[in-house]
Image (tube, rainbow, N blue to C red; front, top):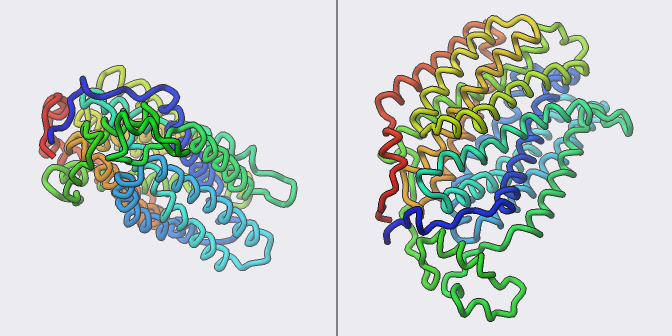
Length: 453
């Protein structure tokens, strides 16, 4: 069956796009709020920096394994169900992480066991929270014409960018003095915010569970509570290649390194490791170069400011540069990774808060171009029927970058600043060299064409 062209694709309404935006924004804000306080929590627990970074590894590994599974399930169960599952995983993980860290900081649990319990609670996000991003990406990609897909996916990616502004901005305000919550306040607050987002999603986003043979004119006469509306039937016909009355043939399973995806996956994997290492180092860099190791509670503010500067730069890339210059996947990927390398070099020299924030912002600007570029490139390399699987590959590759890269970055940084930063720059330049030769041109990717499933 041929992939529908742009004329057959219904645009996503602004209300639905806002709901998708909120799902991504809340999880991003919660995660960056956590990242802004974890260096201080680790210092307060007197835990080595590397172990704080390794506490995320099990969650990241689960993300790599589970994201493709949830992505394939979203093709059968609907995108909304997987978004809801992802939010449940996020809320549960944040609440339990906050609880076990509060117990550890209160002295009722040793630092070792507090960190083990934190890693276990965090794994709920890797296992179940990984259901939401692939579902959101597949929902958007399957309803967006090829020529507009980079821009649409960039808008969704920018929700993460906005979340990374909001999270560090709110985190110091959520370090609550009452009930002894202190540095664990952001965990509890964002668990509550995530719960509100889950209620909003279940209430306002229409059910999109594939009803195949039930779709069409006859479905409107169903009296059941889950009867699809006309809009839902249009969504189903649109996403499943116009086959509203019969179940579509399931496409073959996508692998990471099949020829169509290989260049984009390699770029995303190598560049993702560079980005993960920068993120892992940044909080500890602020504490060290501003002399805040002795007063960890005071570190949340400066770390938050640096993360905010990076997040604003990411938004500039995704809301300003990509749509303004109509950057395609290849252009965004290659230009972004060079800008990121320049920012990392400046970060290596930085010795005060202003220069650290500037270097991190430039690096984030580059990664803010790079990430939507590789995401859109992966999406455009496959057919519309394969968008769910493609989104799972993207999420899995992103998770793979965080299994060991943050801890490796911190370990090398503790050995020598320039070993750590030098490796990151080398990874960025490797992405540029490989991408220059291997990535398909933007013209060939964004041209509307018939694609055989």
